[in-house]
Length: 286
Image (cartoon, rainbow, N blue to C red; front, side):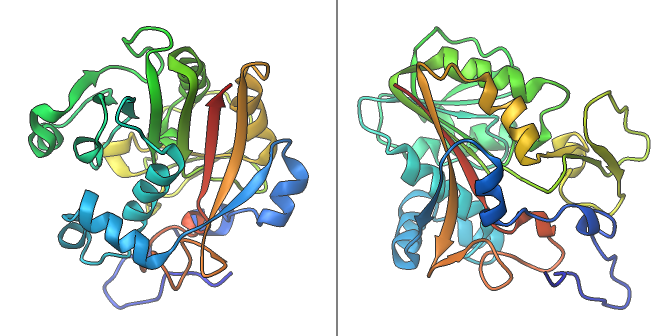
């Protein structure tokens, strides 16, 4: 796979170390090493652009293009969740961008450990805000119909990803659904930081320190990113599910038959190769 970074005089080359280690596992290999269905979702370009105009028209101004990977992940969760007017919807670890206030549903919640005033200003009083850890969300059991988690689970430290899976199961109503994307899957598990002074912990996987890495997301995302292997994805997330009451699928995202993002669509120079080929973990309560 060709690197996205190009040498430009005076420019810092990003992901110098990370791009040598963190490379998305091909889907054919993933299917042989994971015990849940891996299924494709085909995205229609015109429908995607129409959705963006209806639900996040600010995207073009924010990202200088309509074809940005952030807009792609928001659109994919929207499609997979199929939110209805009677639903309670929660955007977990809501971060900087959400379509929550545009959704037609009974209640809209944005949850994060620290919700920015900028995000609150954007959505106003159309949304309920929950400042909390993803490992302990102050909502009643079986009280949420649809949950999204966009580009956040990879930043959850220590066992917070495992704890979040337990919270998802506690919160979902019968017939409820959670979509977590992207799920980064590599040949081996990786724990990546862009901070040489980062306080590491004991976890199976290879620690990588790369001051130029974009995956850890800098201070806003805690200087940390986890990349799963099929086996660590299974042990940390899938095996946490009560399989008598929950199902799980891994969805790959495609446009014109090609997995996206890729070098032609939704990717820009300097972004980590690991962003190629978004996968979404879809959990449903039976």
